[in-house]
Amino acid sequence: METLTLSYEELDRVSVIERVIEKRLRQLEAARMLGLSSRQVRRLRRAYERDGPVGLASKHRGRPSNRRLRPGLEREALAIVRSQYEDFGPTLAHEKLTELHGLEFSVETLRHWMIDDGLWVPRSRREPRIQQPRHRRPCRGELIQIDGSDHEWFEDRAGRCTLLVFVDDATSELMELLFCASESAFSYFAALRSYLEQHGKPVALYSDKASVFRNNKNEPKGGAGVTQFGRALSSLNVDIICANTPAAKGRVERTHLTLQDRLVKELRLRKISDVDSANAFAPEFIGDYNRRFARSPRSEHDAHRPLQAVDDLSRIFSLQETRLVSKSLTLSYKRVLYVLDSTDAARAARRQRVNIEEREDGALTFWHGEHELQATAFPKDHSVRQGEVVENKRLSETMDFIREKQRQRIEAKIAKPSTTLRDARLLRAGTRRRTATGAAPEAPR
View 1 (cartoon, helix red, strand yellow):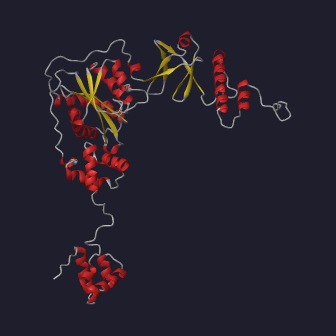
View 2: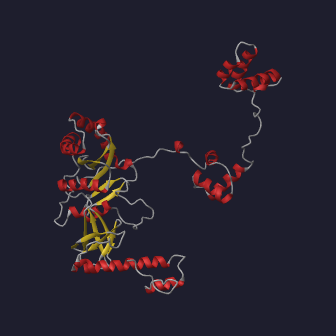
View 3: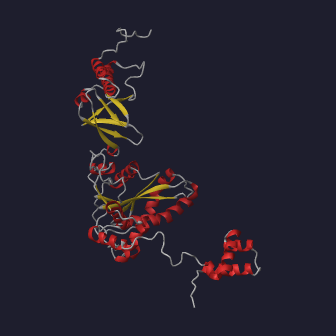
């Protein structure tokens, strides 16, 4: 006696086709029940009448797949992984096996092979990461945890915005709250300036690894330097520490949850629906929050340091970059050419780097050492606009600039493949090309 293997779907087809043959069910209704066309139902009926239930069984059952991998491929791939790529993940190991060894299969196939062989442990089977607790810092102002929370702070009364939060590690006090559009250098500048003016300078800030605080590129364009926020902290003699995980700065993370509950409801009760009004209410909320949730530090010493007279916060909290001054007293910044006024301080800065400070409103100041330099924006796309009025004191610098731009244009023409050696020689000599008759063309009248 032979054993017939059918799937649940095929068993359903047998019962429906039997009812069709017994004329208890129409073909159109059977097609609707099986999700097939009436033509397919007729084909199944003929197969059942010819072979019985066997005719409805899949012909592929028991046969090897057309997409099967060649025998021994799994053993070969795992042997290479064990010998050369034992510490590689499935994706990287698959890239190397495909590119260097010519083995063809999907990355998920390799993942299952490595899991079954014990070469890879999926995330769901790994031991949970243990976060060791640490003691609070003993002094107030020693370590300030900072972070931003993007949330619907005004619910449906206004759009989303970001709240910058400063929390003291020793006491869990809210030290500063600032509503802003997003986490940017200028937003943190504003929050930190308000903090410094109220409390003084802390020993260190504790943040995440956002690009405001840390240069995350492997090969930064400007070299292995600090960010604008890091540079400002260095000027104030304040350090910044970047946490490796959110749990490491759990105090400010848990504060976010409390604020997203309490502060949202307080704003709703006071019918506050804009950033300016929320920032005006923030000091009142901070005082009430600290009365309820702050705790006493282990040490009575306050680690905050007062601001010094040399701490010019307006200059420190600006975007600062350096540029090289040309011999014609020009420099470029953000695709704009600036011409320095010809003063003793500006002439002393030729072929040296000057510091450019950009405020949040876009205003620029130029500094060489302790000397502030005055500059005028100069059109960079053309050397001089036709008919432009140039002051007499700028005429020499303008002519130097014109000559330099003309020289660059001539060099660009010489570099073209279509320029002959004769044309290049004439261009360098400044001689006009002559016509076929040998006379120079007349200028248009």
